[in-house]
Image 1: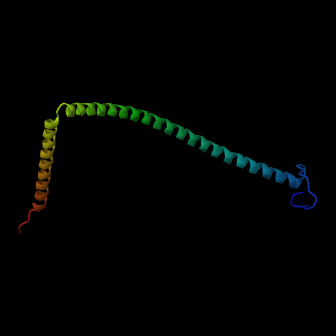
Image 2: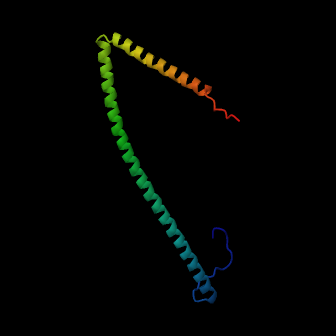
Image 3: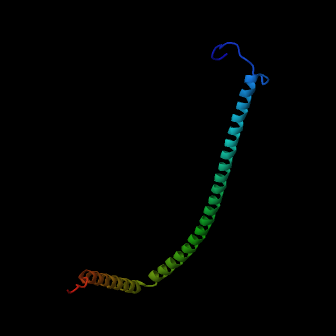
Length: 130
């Protein structure tokens, strides 16, 4: 024996009165463990089903994102091609005009923001006369 002898072993006899109660106790414990395992298997099944549905949703989302990115790539490629044509055909004057327009709108928005900010701090709540 691996751990040494521990005396004579008694064989399990279900006909024995003490053995029958032990046997029914063991059977009940086995049944409880089986029910516990069935519950855990059911939980694992539900989790794996949920994971599968999430994977399907993610794949659908990735597919639609890929399509949208391809569309955006096409639009940006077209824009870059038009900008290259503009630069190559003497678009220096057009570029200067574009920079001036952008600068004008920037200054306009900056002025409106400053005016709105000053106006918000100057306005006070009306005083109530008594």
